[in-house]
Length: 569
Image (cartoon, rainbow, N blue to C red; front, side, top):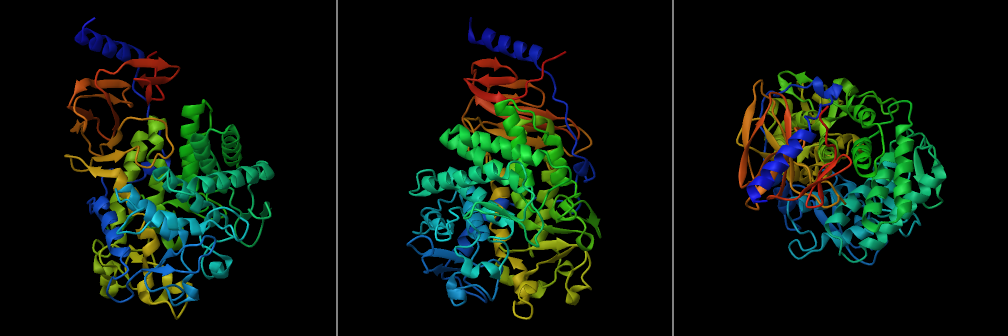
């Protein structure tokens, strides 16, 4: 059979077997505008690279600069570790305060991951190996043997978390595993990764489905309660790390632990969302369903993520609103605190799991595409150069940000007396409240949140049509199986739009998982028409690749392209 006939037969066979995938709504996203006001998508890729160049400069000049220093205390590991300010000018930090030991993994790991995602080799960034330095956050001296937000208890009470607030203890391990995926050969990381997985597996076995605790003591291996909210969504963090460990090391106990933790999360009777772990549960439910044939309730976990019905962390979710003509929809934080308080780091970090989730269940393509369009548009308002001065608390001081540091949050009504006259949306931060009377006004500018810009920077790219973004579904899909380049496109317009999708590898196949069909089998580029307020997920496959089917999966050259082939009735 000649190539033309084979290609035609493959296309006809696929068309006969497959059908359009019915899109699922996320009710909270339905309330967001299709095209938000003050529309502009900034270059997050450049912003993330500029952050890395500017902030990791030990010779930077200016008030409160440099923002990094060397901590020579050698906690947990016999080496120096870079310290990074959490917020500009925080009086607790820097080389001359608290022996230089007070710095957070959320800032350091987040900035290392963010830069890595936009192409910076952080094992040799201007001659320094920042990845190796992260080993100091592995708390061996306490016996916890996991990554923690600080290197030692001596400074832990100065800031949030550390051994009393569960998400602060769990999340650095997700950040570490993501970094480990990018630097698998970095000495020492594998041993730490296995230890972390063993700790999480052991914790899950002890908890036996009950995650209703404030934190878990990984040294004594016992759950603990204190005055901080119970955080059952820590199960999402356990599950994500354990599944990553399973994919990396192949040990079935890690898969069993991931399934156990995810089942514990799913069994919750009320929305257990606390800070930012819930979206990892939603992602993982879709992925494990696709890869392992399970039936976790992704709809429920997405609703918990988005809808702001969290009980203990009241109202935590995704904001929806237009404040004085500014659409702030899509930002993540409290939906109720003084009318709403969205945070930059939470917004950046939610994209990490939610965007690649679409690979495993394309039924959410339209909803996720619409959320990301709103989030990408609104997130620029955290930065002084994009928010009008009258909506900032300290516009006259904001030059200290050097164009790469954003305000920590956007709030409808400021929680500080001196800024009650600033109209919504108010770009501000909580830094001055952390050390009242001592932290400067400039501490409203968030170094730790801004360092996560590379998550957006690795995912978002503009297309030739205003309002239609190209979202990279592989950028933050860590420890995945072999995959071909995969992109989500959402069309916010009231009429269909046609975009051009090109393959960087020359002639390729182009498969749309939303329509369940090939757009082309052997072409350098294709025109893809996206219906009004609809979506497309385009996977570029090898040209004239061999198409096979396995249950609900469509494979090209034995690599899964579509996990959910919809058969025509």
